[in-house]
Image 1 (cartoon, rainbow, N blue to C red):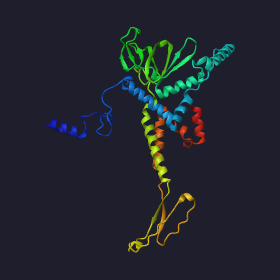
Image 2: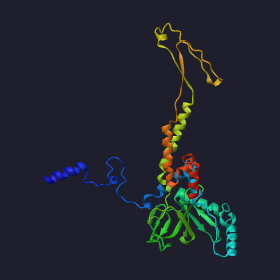
Image 3: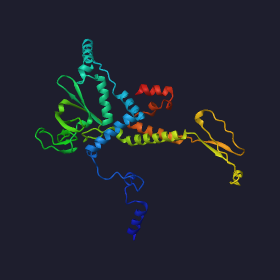
Amino acid sequence: MFKSIANSAKSMFGWNESQYDAINPKQKRRSSGNTILSHDKALGTSERQQLIESARDINRNFAAGAYMIRKHLDYVSTFSFQPQTGDPALDEDLATLMKWWSRPDNCDVGGRHSLHSIIRLAESHRTIDGDVFLLKLKSGHLQGIESDRVRNEAGLGVVHDTDVSKADRVVHGIHVDRGGRPVAFDVYSKDKNWTYEFDRRIKARNIIHHGYFDGFDQIRGVSPLAAAIPTFVDTLEMKEYARLKAKVSQMMALAITRTSAMYQDIENCDQTEYDVDFGKGPVMLDLDPGDEANFLESKNPSTEFQSFITMSLEIASKALDIPWSFFDESYTNTVARGLLYFST
């Protein structure tokens, strides 16, 4: 009897379930499942490529998202070389040598980017794509390798060749040993049809791997924008719908209301038709007695819609740890903005 009462109480109050609401959705939220996936397993080859393209699309086509990315770069990718060996003469020689090497012809294998530009581009690719690779050449130049070019068709798999004897497996193009240390990188190139084909395998000591990592076992980086991409996409779509709606509401429509007395005898009613053309300039309406003219208008977009868009962008900006005051200068006063700027 006591067991039956206990079971009834458990069923009524949920005592037989976990006390954590996060794992008891009860149709209140979507379930994340009970399979723990590694960061690299959660993104297959095609999924990783889709995520990269989605983040790049935000940077290309959404001004607010592109601004947040640029603002992030302003604060994390601006450096100047300042040697401090204690010997002023040596420091001056090192600074001169570094300045010479930082020129595009001496630093970039393509001769297009200075060292400052390479650092900013590398952080940009890390932020948007998740990671990026810099190849150290014998000539002293650096060659940038974008994230999508280091890959393998299977995404994850066991190494079956003898070229990389110390490798235990290959994860999205990176050969790693049992400890997760990179041994070699498989680099692909794109042919004239923009399809990937294997180019070469590069030893790890010649590669600088720059990425965002959230776990000890993680091999490939994942963009911090991943959590904000759905919000960016929804906001962009809603903004487009609101823009189209605003265009429709700007088309002037005139409603003429007639009194019901005029239609008591519809057969004998001499109905007046008004010919109105606003395209010819100012219009004066000479209405019949009892007729009333009103313009149809819509207050669009509404204040509530604008507040929702602002809140959505504010949440999305947190993916890059950007204060909302950077995006909306009116959010804080001048003194607060100055203090925030100098404390960053």
